[in-house]
Length: 316
Image (cartoon, rainbow, N blue to C red; front, side):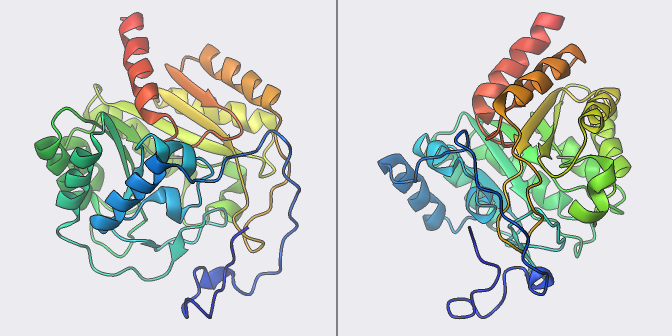
């Protein structure tokens, strides 16, 4: 488990807003949540490319349990606009605080790394940048266009913040035509004040709906975590809400607590419950569903995109 404060190696706390919180309980992980340590040659190669280009990945910043598997296959989720988020969600391990200025060369660096890795499909996400007038929308668009130039055969999936109170920002991103637009609801509405206090559930839902209104050809995707204290009927309501917004792809994964200062895991959901939720989600009309303890937004994203396209064609 990570630490919130490391005053020897890092004089600035990673999560200053959490430093004075009491330690929360930590449940022992069950046998079905086990991952291999990242030690492969492929992992080292991917890491070297990231460092050479000065890039940040959400794989590292959020402490993703699948990093060893993904990086071995040269799959990585690029995190643009820095490593510091203006929000302070209680589940997230990304550093919080006041971010620095945008790196104007970052879109080119991401595109060059995409070409070097030979990626067929790339996922680009970001920290929240409430400090920027457009929330970073133009930076997203520039990154998408740079990838199209340097790696024209690569399909592009973006995982965006909510662009809350950033009028016109969404259209800027959608007009750059990513192949998949992902924005995670993260949890059920009743838990937003404690888990995602800086966001608004119905704004996020409307954001996903607007993507389809602007460009119906773009696939939309969203995900939630379970194990935070939500009720089963609340999960089913989220599914219905997402389908009402014409969202194509749903991911459901187990919440894992980054530190004792973060929101605690209320329960570890067993694999058979994930399978049940997957079955129900398909019955509600999603083109694609990924539901398992270790499911994350970008896990197997390339393979899932191929299946997503096939599912759409099958319905036509």
